[in-house]
Amino acid sequence: MTSMRISQLAERSGVPATTLRFYESAGLLSADRNPAGYRMYGEDAVDRLAFIGAAKHLGLALEEIGELVGVWEAGACRDVKADLRPRISARLAEAEARAAELAAFTASLRGALAHLDALPDRAGRCDPECGFLAPGSPTSGSAPASGGALGGQPVDVVLSPGRRAAAAEAEAERWRSAPVACSLGGDGLRERTARWREAVAGAARASVPEGLRLTLPVDRVTRVAELAAAEQQCCPFFDFRLHLDGPHLHLEVRAPADGGALLTDLFGPTD
Image 1: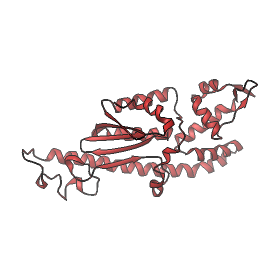
Image 2: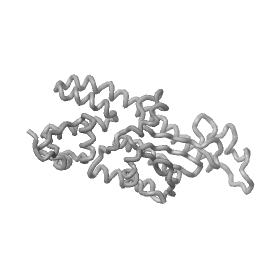
Image 3: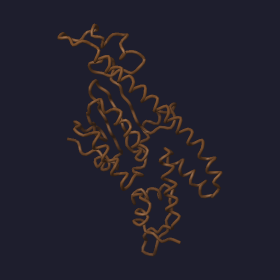
Image 4: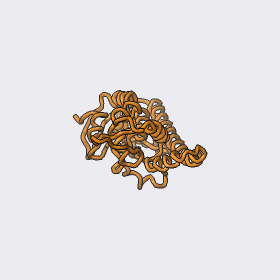
């Protein structure tokens, strides 16, 4: 029995109405129409949205969620378990690989700081005797080096939606075709926005094609990277690129044209 209009379902489920409409267009949610043409939903829509939300928090792509919802609708819990387990295992392997990369990068930054602190202050210009550019220095070994005073090449860290390391390059542009819809709502959205505003407070801003660039102190890199990774779980239409340049972190955020308003809402306008 259909009993809820879209505004009522949004309030019950905590999912914004814009996302509900997108789910309908993507085939994840169905609605009847009353004689006046308004969408009407049954009580089962609340459970379906809870299931979709849980799947999204596991990092599953929408096409995977659509497949999983079909299994869930059949009603056999063992079938859902059998379908879900390999998907979660794949996401876990990807998360562990990313965590290892970030841990290694964090260790290299700590090593670079310790190396800098151990060097004597010199009045002359930097040269290989300073240790910045020495082949055996901590910043020129196997760990990535940052630019600026540490020499070497600046480091770019790209956080774009991806499912397999081998397909990372091909996946780098997925944000352009990702749906402009955010699964966060209510308190979750307000909390995430507040965390971003705190992380980028005081940033120098500049426009870039399809987005903006924020320049921050490099010591915010871990916080920004964690937020960017979390953001793509709920808003895969954002593209994040982190460029480390000596004492500076350049964060570039892009979105498709119809996601520009959401980008401005989250990060503010360019100066």
